[in-house]
Image (cartoon, rainbow, N blue to C red; front, side, top):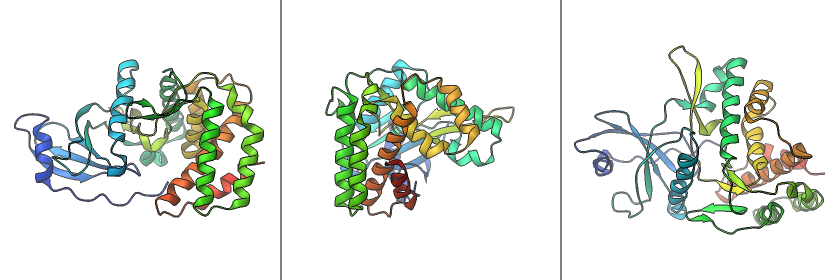
Length: 317
């Protein structure tokens, strides 16, 4: 994914009232922009005592994603033992900052994406096995219906996965055309979805899906023995109620690629997938993810990476 724009500076005096809510006599000593999500601005607030905290500031048009993250982190913390940030404070009054924000505990380490180039094959296998176990745990949370999760739960419920994904494909392909995408490729994608739609019907029960589960949202650090360990999971603002294979498809596309150690580790941790034609279904979701990313980049004034079109062309019959 493309590198986010630099974060705007926040003066120290603007965050001190936020820190005052966390603990009496605690002083903010620095505000450090962090590399992170493509949507929200992230900062570490360093303080006079104890570890720093993370400030996440949401854009005005997506202010509701703050409540969505509170909701989904709450589900994960109540129903799993996954290491996720603790919510320390949140505010949508715009009295302390011009935007909605949340303050979270800072997970140990750095993103796995930033470290994996230095890891051995054995370390990569172990890290991706842990990613597989984490994703399997997330998929253990059943949902009431298929659909996108908003601030208060599922925004528009669909009774079947096929109905939900047919809607999503139509919406994204229409946007692809409106944003200048190739009309012939759009027609090919529509035809491909029509002839492969039965693959989507093999998912009968919706589960919680992270929908952005890649190495950039996984934290890792070295233990006392110098071995890299996965330390946490971040960024649940894309979460949906859907087919677990849609998550697996994004992980394979955005993190695993052709790396054997990553792939074997991931599936070792996740466990066997007992679905007919599941690999063909994953390819259909990979088409959706490439389309979705192309639309997102284009609608935000960015030039989509050329590999997105190549992926879409490769994945349609």
